Image (cartoon, rainbow, N blue to C red; front, side, top):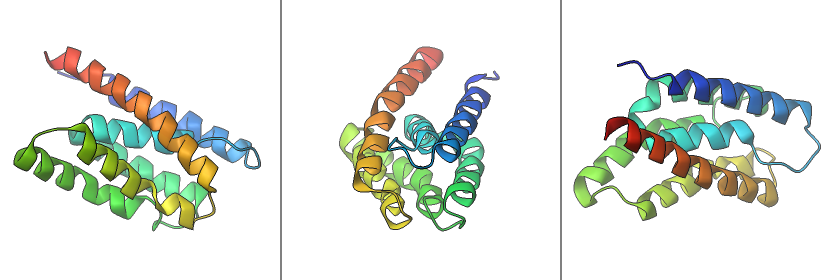
Length: 137
C-alpha cells in the first residue's frame, strides 16, 4: 500500500530548507532537519526517502556532505538494533536525536538554533509516530 506521507514530508523539508536559506540571519530552528529527523526516528524504514534529502540539506546549508548525513546514515541500523535488543523506547531515540544533530554546532549553528531544532523535532516526531501507529494498526 502506497503511503502519501513520505512525499509530503519531503515537500515540507524542501519548504523548510527554503525558509532556512531565505532567512539566514534570523534565529530559527532548522526546519528541514527537524522534519527529516522526526520522520527517520518515527519510522526507520523511511531511510530510502530521508537520507537523500538529508544529503541535499547538508550540501545546501553546510556546503559539505559531512554534516548530519554520515551520522543519519547509521541511524536506521542503530535504531533497529536497539529496538531488537531492548525494545522500542523514548530514551534511545532521544539519545540518537541528540547525537545525530550535534554536527549542527560544528557547522555554524548556535546552541539556541540547535535547541530550537530539537524542540521542533520532538512534537513532529510524536505526530508522525501517531500517524504511523494509526496507519498500521
